[in-house]
Length: 210
Image 1 (cartoon, rainbow, N blue to C red):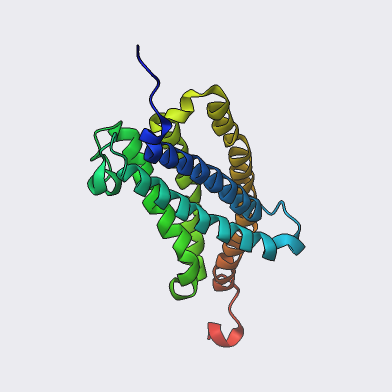
Image 2 (image 1 turned 60 degrees about the horizontal axis):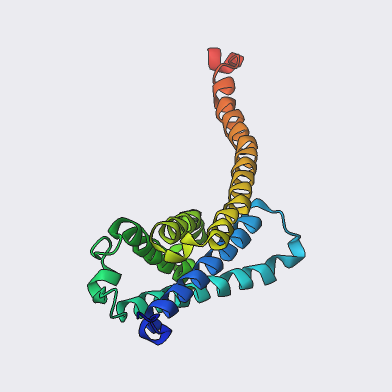
């Protein structure tokens, strides 16, 4: 007579999966807040508090990602080891989806820690870098759906897919408003460039003609 496996035999696997789900939720929430600020859909008086919350969530997500990797590296069933967790596509378990998740984790670390060096690298470069936060979300979602066994649960899978709705809406709104702001600036540059050309064709004064 067979007996069910004790959950204690899979403690690292269960804990690692839980940390992965938490990381996914934190990343999605952080990205939604970041896009909300970029699209300017939040009141200005909330901006300082939202920035702090966005930063804290980004750091918490890094902690959850780290815990996710460490727990799975220690899992005796997965047998990933340090190489399988740190090197993309090196693991034997669903290497494509796991590798994409590892790349997303590295990108999340770079963008999350860039908060502390934005003065050194410049605000303009920092803002350009943060356009890739949506890519972190996409990689984490693809990783969770492709490699995560919890995605086989309908409620979990639908919840993950539902998170794409606010992200896509805010991303499209941000893109549309960014284009709207860039058009007046481009028009001013064109108008400014025409001024020397008009002056160059002005009728010369009598002294210049002589």
